[in-house]
Image (tube, rainbow, N blue to C red; front, side, top):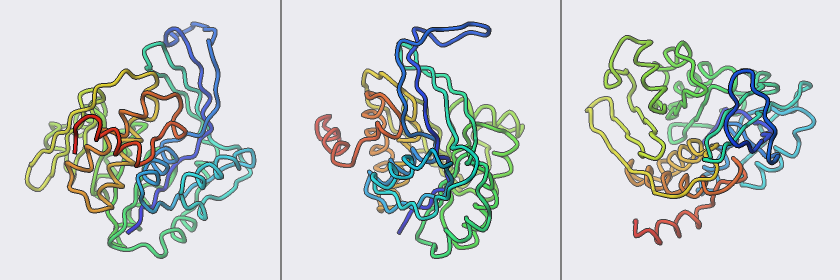
Length: 295
């Protein structure tokens, strides 16, 4: 079993600020850091650190070679990460004193991925494998169709949120992942209640309130609370959660157990600065669960 991830690779620029900027406001930063990010890279690294076999499908510019190296160091297979003539995607991230963030993205090389690259990457994939997708690259719908034809389980994170894109993805998605705000936006766009969103599986993340998984065929719901920690940076927490959940499912865990694993991983991640660089490894997550009395 393996996880394939058509996902963004970004260079993250972090700015520590007293409060998030308001329209027209200029702020002086209290600190500056650079790290690896992008929802795709974050999820790939989280899943790999959880012990899954992960193949990343993506693109970088020449100045982003270190990003590919960082993915490889975390255990991600990077043979399908290409180098493009345009610059690597990047994100400018403001983080306030409470750990909340504001992010501006530039797609860069993430928009240069081709169907041929995806088809080649999925060449050996099959029914026991998983494809994970987000909205920070091109060709998510086309990739999902290819994966479905091969029998893969398709996990789609509808973020950054776009209602039209999310609605288009529903017929080719096995697990739709949204946060509470995105769930409301999608239900409003579709003219249905959240419970009526037509997805085989729906996973709604609720930050400090945990997450809920709804099985579409039966209406069964699995709820898992978040672990109480003092966050210093919430950037990438959702990606950490998803990467660990998908890895847990790939390893044969039941839904609830996979979600608890993800909740523990993201609880650790938010107590550290950074995104991909802040992801915990499986041993750290297991130790955290043992310390909190969770099995």
